[in-house]
Image (cartoon, rainbow, N blue to C red; front, side, top):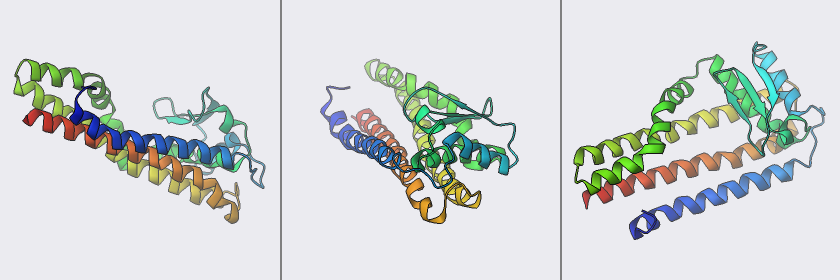
Amino acid sequence: MIFDPLYIMLAIPGLLLGLYATWKTKSTFKRYHQYAASSRMTGAQAARRLLDREGLQAVQVEPVQGFLSDHYDPRSRTLRLSPDVYQSPSLAAIGVACHEAGHAIQHATQYAPLQLRSALVPVTQFGSNMVYFIFFIGLLMNQPLLVNGAILLFTAVVLFTLVTLPVEWDASARAKRLMVAAGIVSEQERADAGRVLNAAFLTYVSALVSSLLTLLYFIMRARR
């Protein structure tokens, strides 16, 4: 597939957008990591305050290794923050921490897009790992059932990336609103704290674009 001119032509836009989104997220985080919030709260403290404010004392906040490896695990109800977020009082760290707390709040309030995304996780994991094998075996063996099955399976992957957009946007919107209401940042600091979240949203847009172009490749190759 990597030697197929059609695939290369379709893959390049998504690849370039993904590289730009990654660069934008990292550079924005590093820029606003230099500015401390007037509250002097660390990312871990900010997340804890939001969770407690929403009655989510049972959700744990703990450190995890890696750069911007921050995430919320709904299975263990644990919010994990990278070192640059967990122990830093920067506006960038607070923005990221409050965003992840937003996911915990979504989980607690049974936010519908999050529930749908969670339901798609098993089929998405299987599809991401097996779809290429199934598709090309189907082509080589001239088995339309396998080819169409692979396309249907990858459609679930595309749906997952599509549903991710409102989930991430809503978590950021909650974070921007609640971090001011909870006294974590001032109204003047909110914009800067949220800039890294705006940049990170581009990574989810690029994932959707890439998955849509890959699905288009499968469909065009199957028709040939």
